[in-house]
Length: 487
Image (cartoon, rainbow, N blue to C red):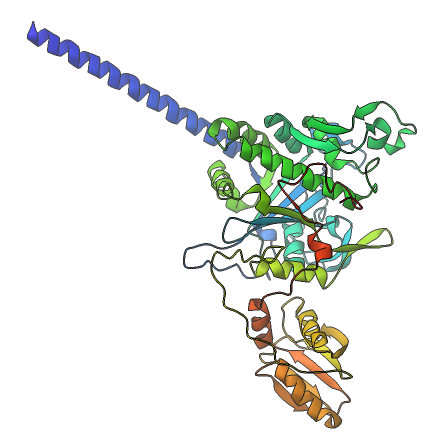
């Protein structure tokens, strides 16, 4: 009897172990299936199209922390399922409808998203074309034309990345492109997003060519929007606020804030995140460094500890130039410099470490002295930085441009015989600079690598309140700042 009892007990144990093993296989198999499913959804773009002269990669500190720059592109391609959501009049060529540069600070407790107006005039560097050749430089071209370079349905994410890197002087770590269908599916996967509609929206607002007001589409007030209605809301220009594309960008920032809040407040569990991940990856194109579900998940989890109040959105400083938009310099350069210096919009040190106090600038009065400033390096915007330094000491800057050569190791101060005393005084603002008397009239400052290095590590000047007050945090009142002219 005792022997038979032991055998039955052993048999039961074998059965239990077999069941557990079977369950483990099922669970692992399901996880593997999910992993493969997400991987199969993801498309990547060719990294060979990235510029050969990219900004340097940010260095990690002793703890391995460094900033991360993510370029988010909303594509308005009408190819495939997108045509049903956005119309087909524009054809299947991929175009960028929305572009946001998201900067995650090294402390991983702060982030800021900078919207770049699609109609803004920027310098588009050479980009790889489908036939394997590279396009020529396009100075003062419309920003969203970078994405359509090459005229393909998927667009040219690498060209947009090249353009933003040239504009910001910052290396983009990851680029993600989502189309109409992906955005609509994403909002449905989270069961809609609560947004504020400032006034009644009619069919004629969505389609100005309709010729009459039409039926009510969205009533004023808080609404839960998903799918096509969510897409219509973030894309519409007419009938809300100032009817402009830039005004629309403020509603996009508000919508993204609400979406982030919805995801974070709902908890980042597998149950909550899997439908969202599945919806997003179906319509997502990414850089090769994010080419798997695991990499995307790891990337997403790296930002889960940022409080909503510390996630800010702002539009790059701009102004109208006829029917187009100019990015305002040096304001936009100062904004990017603030990010590169690991400072938040309101001046908080988000580097994750204590930074030393800067060396005070010598007191020099340049009242009545005219100076030309030349960038003798390849660092973008250096002449503007030098001009700011001089005007702060009351010098009159007559020109800011690129020098004949960009290989100056040391800053050079050129002066005529009558200006020797003023040149020596000015040299106090540029420690280690060299003076050279030439047969010229006046003073020129040719900035070298020594000043570029100092400028790269120097704290930027505080951003003006007129700019920072436009920023919205992800926990802001959903009915605030939905167009220009609103508080």
